[in-house]
Image 1 (cartoon, rainbow, N blue to C red):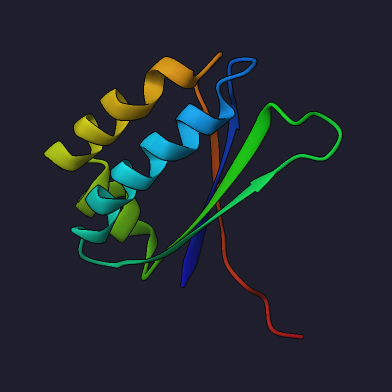
Image 2 (cartoon, rainbow, N blue to C red; image 1 turned 180 degrees about the vertical axis):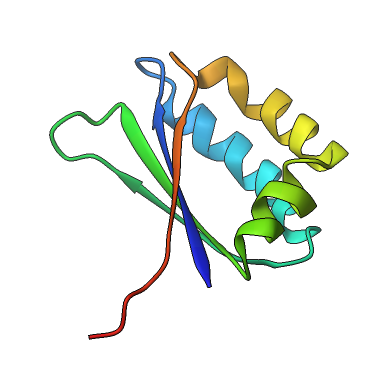
Length: 97
């Protein structure tokens, strides 16, 4: 499994509206082959920073199945008005201890 971590700088005072819109946008993820889960967290020191932890079967599930689909365009259109800057995205995988 691969986890996409997206750091998003949300406009001041827009968190509630962003989260409401994110609930709608999550339906687009759920339609994507290889999508597993989403978790949302907020930074404690700067509460305008939101982190999305999105689970995918593989890197291709995110980069090809989702990012190259019309669902991504719709996802972006639903959420972009809340972004101060483009989100920073990295992909991580678990390393067993």
